[in-house]
Amino acid sequence: MKKPILLAVAVFIAAMTSGRAADAKENWEKNCLKCHGADGKGYTKLGKKAGVKDLTDPKVQAGFTDEKAFKAIKEGVKDGDKVKMMPAEKLTDDEIKALVAFVRGLKK
Image (tube, rainbow, N blue to C red; front, side, top):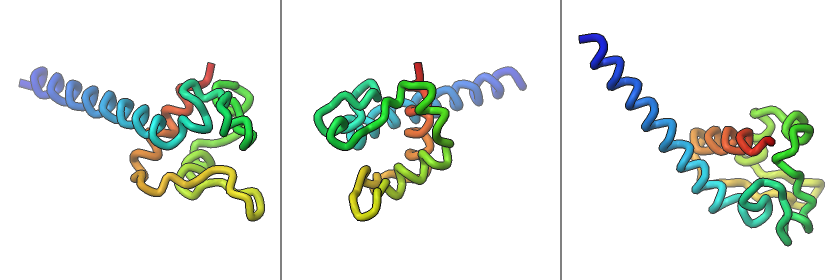
């Protein structure tokens, strides 16, 4: 009896994880792609203009915590009065956490 329950729980967890990964990729494409690019390198017209960092670079990834990334996505980033990154206002906290994990997965 325990094996079928454990198997069902494992399948449910796997489905939830893959669903969140798909949602994170979709949210990346909707909210981040224009500046950060599909690969996270920031080699887009807007990314170059904004001075976007290469999120695939391990040194760049080491330069921020998950909490800082979460805050940047949720609240946006400003440099004085200049907006460097718009907040992702329509995303839930769970979607932002999944997006942070997605960004961590960009590291080469």
